[in-house]
Image (cartoon, rainbow over all chains, first blue to last red; front, top):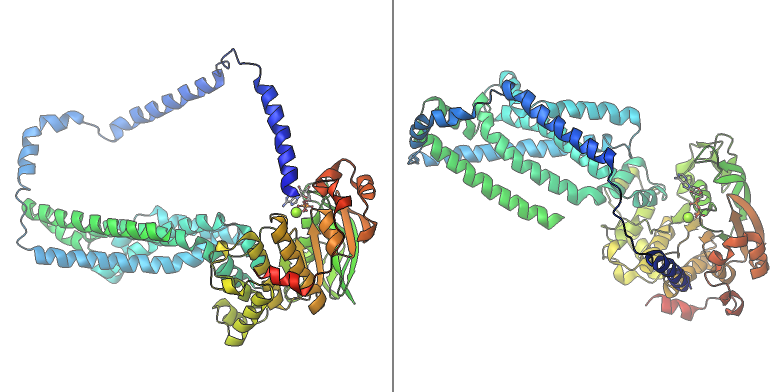
Length: 283
Length: 281
Ligand SMILES: Nc1ncnc2c1ncn2[C@@H]1O[C@H](COP(=O)(O)OP(=O)(O)O)[C@@H](O)[C@H]1O
Ligand SMILES: [Mg+2]
């Protein structure tokens, strides 16, 4: 019966659309002055910004050409890459990955409660505002800065790197997690609430099943980028292959530097590919 | 015994318009009441207030369920969560968690009854699982227990939602347009299931319906709403097309879907066991 009604109303709308299209349009719509003015303004702002930043960024494109002889010599030093110590590089690369694993794992564990506490559809404003600001500050400070601080606090080595990734990634993941939570359907949550469940149970059974695939995907993505970050943490003494890399660059051992870089490129690409596969599986 | 007792309920979402205006309503144990009205008349809002999912205005009157105040003057009372365990809600959009299995969804009905830690970990005893399974078999979808909820048809999901209220042991079922998104055959099955729970378990049912013919077929009593007010409360048999025309004016065609069909429709048929066999298919 319902469908019959929908059908008749469908006919009605069809009729009206026919009558409205029967007069053929003869003119283009007038040019929108306001719109073209604002797009002009936008371009002016973008160009202005670039010009303003030119000096501060010390832009000297000519230097690339003037010193081209040096550049060739410099590049020459990288070839052929020297893999004599490859066992050590691979070992350090494993440590780098292990730093990323622990840093990511700890931050996932923390991002679950923090992510929920950042979501405006779950908690009141006096909870999510302060928690969001805290997460902002975790995120605003680069993992390298945290790494330097933790090297001072817990000493040189991978653990400082783990702590640095943990804090920074918690700030990132909590925000991503809460965005997923804010996009859920409220109906299933209400369905759980209606059974007399408590607030925690609403989250466990109403919210988390809905966001889990996205959360997994975000976590894997962050793991990929944490491996990349972890490759440089060693520069400030927080362990992993970055330490080796920094020693070689500082000592002008470019052939060895090239070998380390190739190891990093291969492992990061392999991990990215594997994690992308996994992400496709969950979503 | 009074199952639902509402007096002076007001609700305004916006300043200028009341979505519910001075609603007064009593429902006794074992009744199956239809709530009808055009879309926007306030059916969902009323049901959500009874379940304590929405709060009335500050001068919003009082709602008691099973003699316990669930909200008064815009404040949800402290005992609301306990009263909610007695109330099962079935929504138009099914409101199951689509990624969880049907059985898990039905077990959710026990959350208000088992110790909080056990419910939160999703640890249910064998007996509790059996209880959920028997609820599923009563609504005729036990064969689908291990499927994800989203892989069920709309009608099956709706019956799973009813199974959740059965598992919950609800003494009052509030169903908000449970059949609005279903085809006529599935609609019948869902209404038959509600009817059976009402008659066999003496569970009180308030079901909002978009179409008057289902109200006449399944409910002795109908409450009609218009613009947030109760404009009719009485035997469904008094709902003649003329009466509804008078009551709803220009909206009446919407209520009937097909105005002419109402008078020629076969009258209410009691639901026999053989119909339920169909429901299990
Ligand atoms: N969350 C909300 N915010 C604002 N207005 C709402 C909200 N829910 C319902 N309304 C309004 O309240 C009135 C009643 O709506 P509703 O209870 O959904 O009617 P029905 O279920 O009978 O179709 C409508 O005018 C609707 O626009
Ligand atoms: Mg509604």
